[in-house]
Length: 123
Image (cartoon, rainbow, N blue to C red; front, side, top):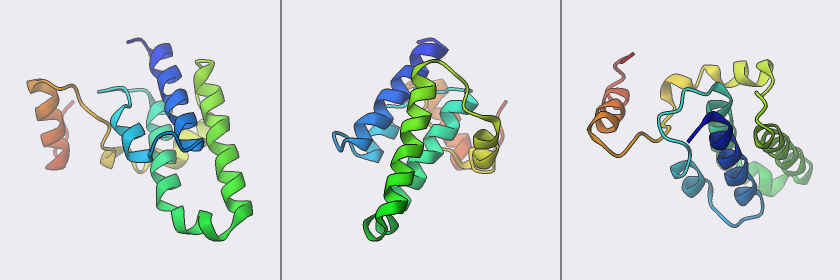
C-alpha cells in the first residue's frame, strides 16, 4: 500500500472510532504496518490520547466536542493525502520511540517489534 492509501486508511479508522463503529484498540491494530510516515504516527498518538481521556470526555462535554473535532480535522487532512501540520507532528514526536505501530506479520516484523520492546534502536 502506498502513502496516500495508508493515510486514507488511517482517516477511515479515525472516523470509525468517532462514530463508535470501532474501538481504538481495533483501529490501532489495523494501522498500516511498519510505516515511517510522521503524520500517521501523530494520528496514532492522537487516538491513544483519545482513549486515555475517556473519563475526562465523559465528564466534560466541551472537551469531548473539541477532541472529536480535532480528530475529524486530522482525518480530513489524511484523507486528502496531506501532511499533518508540523506543530501537531512535533507535539507527538516525543512519544514516537514508544509507538507500538503494528509490524509486518513475518520474521522481520517480529524482530522489529521485539527490538522495540527491548528498547533497542534498529535502523
